[in-house]
Image (cartoon, rainbow, N blue to C red):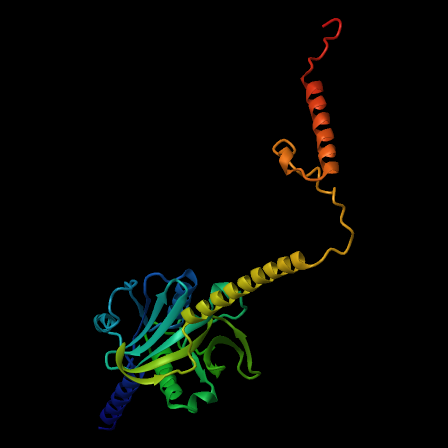
Length: 320
Protein backbone atom coordinates (compact mmCIF):
# COMPACT_ATOMS: atom_id res chain seq x y z
CA UNK A 1 0.00 0.00 0.00
CA UNK A 2 2.84 2.31 0.78
CA UNK A 3 4.37 1.82 -2.67
CA UNK A 4 1.00 2.56 -4.35
CA UNK A 5 0.58 5.77 -2.32
CA UNK A 6 4.12 6.84 -3.17
CA UNK A 7 3.50 6.27 -6.88
CA UNK A 8 0.31 8.30 -6.70
CA UNK A 9 2.08 11.12 -4.90
CA UNK A 10 4.79 11.12 -7.56
CA UNK A 11 2.18 11.29 -10.32
CA UNK A 12 0.40 14.18 -8.61
CA UNK A 13 3.69 16.05 -8.19
CA UNK A 14 4.54 15.50 -11.83
CA UNK A 15 1.11 16.80 -12.89
CA UNK A 16 1.58 19.90 -10.76
CA UNK A 17 5.01 20.48 -12.25
CA UNK A 18 3.66 20.06 -15.76
CA UNK A 19 0.90 22.55 -15.03
CA UNK A 20 3.39 25.09 -13.73
CA UNK A 21 5.71 24.54 -16.70
CA UNK A 22 2.92 25.02 -19.23
CA UNK A 23 2.67 28.09 -21.42
CA UNK A 24 -0.27 29.78 -19.74
CA UNK A 25 0.14 33.42 -20.84
CA UNK A 26 -0.92 33.35 -24.51
CA UNK A 27 -0.20 37.03 -25.15
CA UNK A 28 0.54 37.82 -28.82
CA UNK A 29 1.44 41.21 -30.28
CA UNK A 30 0.78 42.23 -33.89
CA UNK A 31 3.55 44.50 -35.21
CA UNK A 32 3.17 46.08 -38.65
CA UNK A 33 3.10 49.45 -40.43
CA UNK A 34 1.28 51.48 -43.07
CA UNK A 35 2.41 52.12 -46.63
CA UNK A 36 4.90 54.92 -47.23
CA UNK A 37 7.15 54.27 -44.22
CA UNK A 38 10.82 55.13 -44.60
CA UNK A 39 13.61 52.57 -44.49
CA UNK A 40 14.70 53.67 -41.00
CA UNK A 41 11.23 53.18 -39.52
CA UNK A 42 10.92 49.82 -41.25
CA UNK A 43 14.24 48.67 -39.75
CA UNK A 44 13.05 49.88 -36.33
CA UNK A 45 9.93 47.75 -36.69
CA UNK A 46 12.03 44.71 -37.63
CA UNK A 47 14.29 45.27 -34.61
CA UNK A 48 11.27 45.28 -32.30
CA UNK A 49 10.06 42.04 -33.88
CA UNK A 50 13.46 40.46 -33.22
CA UNK A 51 13.31 41.50 -29.57
CA UNK A 52 9.76 40.16 -29.14
CA UNK A 53 9.44 36.41 -29.84
CA UNK A 54 5.70 36.61 -29.13
CA UNK A 55 5.14 39.07 -32.00
CA UNK A 56 3.37 38.44 -35.29
CA UNK A 57 3.76 40.27 -38.60
CA UNK A 58 1.32 41.42 -41.24
CA UNK A 59 1.57 43.05 -44.66
CA UNK A 60 1.48 46.83 -44.94
CA UNK A 61 -1.85 48.54 -44.50
CA UNK A 62 -3.19 51.04 -47.01
CA UNK A 63 -3.47 54.64 -45.79
CA UNK A 64 -7.04 54.96 -47.07
CA UNK A 65 -8.30 52.11 -44.87
CA UNK A 66 -9.92 52.82 -41.53
CA UNK A 67 -7.80 52.04 -38.47
CA UNK A 68 -10.66 50.07 -36.91
CA UNK A 69 -9.99 47.32 -39.48
CA UNK A 70 -6.89 46.45 -37.43
CA UNK A 71 -9.20 44.95 -34.78
CA UNK A 72 -10.37 42.37 -37.32
CA UNK A 73 -6.79 41.62 -38.39
CA UNK A 74 -5.79 41.08 -34.74
CA UNK A 75 -8.76 38.75 -34.28
CA UNK A 76 -7.73 36.67 -37.31
CA UNK A 77 -4.12 36.52 -36.03
CA UNK A 78 -5.23 35.69 -32.44
CA UNK A 79 -3.44 38.80 -31.15
CA UNK A 80 -4.59 40.73 -28.09
CA UNK A 81 -2.09 43.62 -28.46
CA UNK A 82 -0.96 45.71 -31.41
CA UNK A 83 1.93 48.02 -32.31
CA UNK A 84 1.05 49.95 -35.47
CA UNK A 85 3.45 52.40 -37.14
CA UNK A 86 1.48 55.04 -39.06
CA UNK A 87 3.48 57.23 -41.45
CA UNK A 88 2.36 60.56 -42.88
CA UNK A 89 3.97 62.56 -45.70
CA UNK A 90 6.98 60.20 -45.53
CA UNK A 91 8.31 62.44 -42.74
CA UNK A 92 6.37 61.82 -39.54
CA UNK A 93 5.80 58.45 -37.87
CA UNK A 94 3.15 57.77 -35.23
CA UNK A 95 3.07 54.68 -33.03
CA UNK A 96 -0.23 53.18 -31.84
CA UNK A 97 0.02 50.94 -28.76
CA UNK A 98 -3.37 49.27 -28.47
CA UNK A 99 -5.11 46.62 -26.40
CA UNK A 100 -7.50 44.99 -28.87
CA UNK A 101 -10.43 44.80 -29.16
CA UNK A 102 -11.63 46.58 -26.00
CA UNK A 103 -8.95 49.24 -25.61
CA UNK A 104 -7.43 51.48 -24.43
CA UNK A 105 -5.19 52.85 -27.19
CA UNK A 106 -2.29 55.29 -26.90
CA UNK A 107 -0.84 57.34 -29.76
CA UNK A 108 2.79 58.53 -29.79
CA UNK A 109 4.98 60.64 -32.07
CA UNK A 110 8.21 58.77 -32.80
CA UNK A 111 11.42 60.81 -32.97
CA UNK A 112 15.20 60.26 -32.80
CA UNK A 113 15.07 56.78 -34.30
CA UNK A 114 18.30 54.75 -34.34
CA UNK A 115 18.32 51.08 -35.34
CA UNK A 116 20.67 48.27 -34.33
CA UNK A 117 22.56 48.33 -37.64
CA UNK A 118 22.88 52.10 -37.64
CA UNK A 119 24.32 52.62 -34.16
CA UNK A 120 27.21 50.10 -34.40
CA UNK A 121 27.05 49.47 -30.66
CA UNK A 122 29.06 46.79 -28.89
CA UNK A 123 26.19 45.22 -26.94
CA UNK A 124 24.58 41.93 -27.92
CA UNK A 125 21.91 39.58 -26.58
CA UNK A 126 20.45 36.19 -27.36
CA UNK A 127 17.58 36.30 -29.83
CA UNK A 128 14.35 35.36 -28.09
CA UNK A 129 15.62 35.91 -24.54
CA UNK A 130 13.25 37.47 -22.01
CA UNK A 131 13.97 41.11 -21.13
CA UNK A 132 13.82 42.96 -17.85
CA UNK A 133 11.56 46.02 -18.06
CA UNK A 134 12.81 49.08 -16.18
CA UNK A 135 10.53 52.11 -15.70
CA UNK A 136 11.36 55.55 -14.37
CA UNK A 137 9.77 56.87 -11.16
CA UNK A 138 8.07 59.61 -13.19
CA UNK A 139 5.62 57.02 -14.58
CA UNK A 140 3.84 57.01 -11.18
CA UNK A 141 3.25 60.77 -11.12
CA UNK A 142 0.23 60.87 -13.46
CA UNK A 143 -2.61 58.49 -14.31
CA UNK A 144 -1.88 58.73 -18.06
CA UNK A 145 1.71 57.54 -17.59
CA UNK A 146 0.52 54.76 -15.27
CA UNK A 147 -1.78 53.53 -18.03
CA UNK A 148 1.07 53.74 -20.58
CA UNK A 149 3.32 51.78 -18.20
CA UNK A 150 0.77 48.97 -17.91
CA UNK A 151 0.37 48.87 -21.69
CA UNK A 152 4.14 48.60 -22.22
CA UNK A 153 4.42 45.85 -19.58
CA UNK A 154 1.80 43.74 -21.36
CA UNK A 155 3.25 44.40 -24.83
CA UNK A 156 7.04 44.14 -24.36
CA UNK A 157 7.21 41.44 -21.64
CA UNK A 158 7.81 37.99 -23.14
CA UNK A 159 5.37 35.38 -21.75
CA UNK A 160 6.87 32.71 -19.56
CA UNK A 161 7.47 29.34 -21.25
CA UNK A 162 6.79 30.78 -24.69
CA UNK A 163 7.84 28.24 -27.39
CA UNK A 164 10.03 30.75 -29.23
CA UNK A 165 11.57 32.28 -26.11
CA UNK A 166 14.86 31.31 -24.44
CA UNK A 167 15.13 30.72 -20.68
CA UNK A 168 17.64 33.54 -20.25
CA UNK A 169 17.48 37.13 -19.04
CA UNK A 170 20.43 38.96 -20.59
CA UNK A 171 19.10 42.42 -21.58
CA UNK A 172 17.10 45.30 -20.10
CA UNK A 173 14.50 47.51 -21.79
CA UNK A 174 14.46 50.90 -20.08
CA UNK A 175 11.68 53.49 -20.30
CA UNK A 176 12.47 56.90 -18.79
CA UNK A 177 10.48 60.14 -18.82
CA UNK A 178 12.35 63.36 -19.52
CA UNK A 179 11.36 66.63 -21.24
CA UNK A 180 7.75 65.42 -21.74
CA UNK A 181 8.99 62.42 -23.76
CA UNK A 182 9.53 58.71 -23.15
CA UNK A 183 13.11 57.62 -23.92
CA UNK A 184 13.41 53.95 -24.90
CA UNK A 185 16.79 52.17 -24.64
CA UNK A 186 17.93 48.53 -24.78
CA UNK A 187 20.99 47.40 -22.77
CA UNK A 188 22.91 44.15 -22.44
CA UNK A 189 23.61 42.85 -18.93
CA UNK A 190 27.37 42.26 -19.02
CA UNK A 191 27.92 41.67 -15.30
CA UNK A 192 24.98 41.57 -12.92
CA UNK A 193 27.18 41.86 -9.83
CA UNK A 194 29.10 44.92 -11.03
CA UNK A 195 26.04 46.52 -12.72
CA UNK A 196 27.92 46.68 -16.04
CA UNK A 197 25.75 47.20 -19.12
CA UNK A 198 26.32 47.99 -22.80
CA UNK A 199 23.74 49.41 -25.19
CA UNK A 200 22.40 47.16 -27.91
CA UNK A 201 19.77 49.26 -29.63
CA UNK A 202 17.36 50.24 -31.03
CA UNK A 203 16.68 53.61 -29.43
CA UNK A 204 13.85 56.09 -29.90
CA UNK A 205 11.85 58.80 -28.14
CA UNK A 206 8.05 58.73 -27.84
CA UNK A 207 5.92 61.82 -27.26
CA UNK A 208 2.48 60.96 -25.94
CA UNK A 209 -0.29 62.64 -27.95
CA UNK A 210 -3.55 61.15 -26.67
CA UNK A 211 -5.16 58.14 -24.99
CA UNK A 212 -8.55 56.81 -26.11
CA UNK A 213 -10.83 54.46 -24.26
CA UNK A 214 -11.57 52.16 -27.20
CA UNK A 215 -9.37 50.36 -29.69
CA UNK A 216 -8.29 52.91 -32.34
CA UNK A 217 -11.12 55.21 -31.28
CA UNK A 218 -13.63 55.94 -28.58
CA UNK A 219 -13.90 58.65 -25.92
CA UNK A 220 -10.82 60.73 -25.22
CA UNK A 221 -9.22 59.94 -21.86
CA UNK A 222 -6.09 62.12 -22.10
CA UNK A 223 -4.68 64.75 -24.47
CA UNK A 224 -1.20 66.25 -24.26
CA UNK A 225 -1.47 70.04 -24.26
CA UNK A 226 2.27 70.50 -24.91
CA UNK A 227 2.13 68.54 -28.17
CA UNK A 228 2.64 70.59 -31.35
CA UNK A 229 1.92 69.14 -34.79
CA UNK A 230 5.11 68.73 -36.90
CA UNK A 231 3.35 70.42 -39.84
CA UNK A 232 2.94 73.60 -37.77
CA UNK A 233 6.61 73.50 -36.77
CA UNK A 234 7.72 73.15 -40.40
CA UNK A 235 5.36 75.99 -41.44
CA UNK A 236 6.82 78.28 -38.77
CA UNK A 237 10.34 77.47 -39.97
CA UNK A 238 9.40 78.34 -43.57
CA UNK A 239 7.82 81.64 -42.46
CA UNK A 240 10.92 82.53 -40.44
CA UNK A 241 13.18 81.81 -43.45
CA UNK A 242 10.95 83.91 -45.74
CA UNK A 243 10.96 86.82 -43.28
CA UNK A 244 14.74 86.65 -43.07
CA UNK A 245 15.00 86.88 -46.87
CA UNK A 246 12.58 89.82 -47.02
CA UNK A 247 14.51 91.69 -44.33
CA UNK A 248 17.72 91.17 -46.28
CA UNK A 249 16.18 92.54 -49.50
CA UNK A 250 14.71 95.57 -47.71
CA UNK A 251 18.10 96.32 -46.19
CA UNK A 252 19.68 96.26 -49.66
CA UNK A 253 17.04 98.67 -51.05
CA UNK A 254 17.48 101.01 -48.11
CA UNK A 255 21.26 101.09 -48.54
CA UNK A 256 20.86 101.93 -52.26
CA UNK A 257 18.48 104.83 -51.56
CA UNK A 258 20.79 106.18 -48.88
CA UNK A 259 23.75 106.07 -51.27
CA UNK A 260 21.75 107.93 -53.95
CA UNK A 261 20.71 110.65 -51.50
CA UNK A 262 24.22 111.13 -50.11
CA UNK A 263 26.26 114.08 -51.48
CA UNK A 264 29.57 113.31 -53.23
CA UNK A 265 32.61 113.72 -51.00
CA UNK A 266 34.95 114.69 -53.88
CA UNK A 267 34.91 117.22 -56.77
CA UNK A 268 33.20 115.83 -59.87
CA UNK A 269 34.63 116.52 -63.36
CA UNK A 270 31.84 117.68 -65.74
CA UNK A 271 33.60 116.00 -68.74
CA UNK A 272 33.96 112.65 -66.96
CA UNK A 273 31.04 110.96 -68.75
CA UNK A 274 31.78 112.28 -72.24
CA UNK A 275 33.25 109.05 -73.58
CA UNK A 276 30.55 106.91 -71.99
CA UNK A 277 27.89 108.39 -74.32
CA UNK A 278 26.91 106.59 -77.51
CA UNK A 279 28.31 109.08 -80.05
CA UNK A 280 26.69 107.46 -83.09
CA UNK A 281 23.11 107.83 -81.84
CA UNK A 282 23.49 111.25 -80.20
CA UNK A 283 21.98 114.25 -81.99
CA UNK A 284 23.57 117.67 -82.41
CA UNK A 285 20.55 119.37 -80.82
CA UNK A 286 21.13 117.46 -77.58
CA UNK A 287 24.66 118.87 -77.20
CA UNK A 288 24.30 122.08 -75.19
CA UNK A 289 27.83 122.95 -74.12
CA UNK A 290 30.21 124.35 -76.81
CA UNK A 291 33.28 122.66 -75.37
CA UNK A 292 31.47 119.33 -75.22
CA UNK A 293 30.33 119.74 -78.84
CA UNK A 294 33.89 120.37 -80.05
CA UNK A 295 35.22 117.38 -78.14
CA UNK A 296 32.52 115.10 -79.53
CA UNK A 297 33.16 116.23 -83.08
CA UNK A 298 36.87 115.54 -82.65
CA UNK A 299 36.13 112.02 -81.39
CA UNK A 300 33.84 111.36 -84.35
CA UNK A 301 36.52 112.48 -86.77
CA UNK A 302 39.07 110.16 -85.20
CA UNK A 303 36.62 107.25 -85.35
CA UNK A 304 36.07 107.81 -89.08
CA UNK A 305 39.82 107.77 -89.74
CA UNK A 306 40.20 104.54 -87.78
CA UNK A 307 37.42 102.91 -89.83
CA UNK A 308 39.11 103.98 -93.10
CA UNK A 309 42.41 102.46 -91.99
CA UNK A 310 40.68 99.21 -91.15
CA UNK A 311 38.96 99.05 -94.56
CA UNK A 312 42.23 99.46 -96.57
CA UNK A 313 43.35 96.25 -98.30
CA UNK A 314 46.58 94.71 -97.09
CA UNK A 315 49.59 94.76 -99.44
CA UNK A 316 50.73 91.40 -100.69
CA UNK A 317 54.29 90.44 -99.86
CA UNK A 318 56.73 89.60 -102.60
CA UNK A 319 56.99 85.91 -103.25
CA UNK A 320 53.45 85.09 -102.31
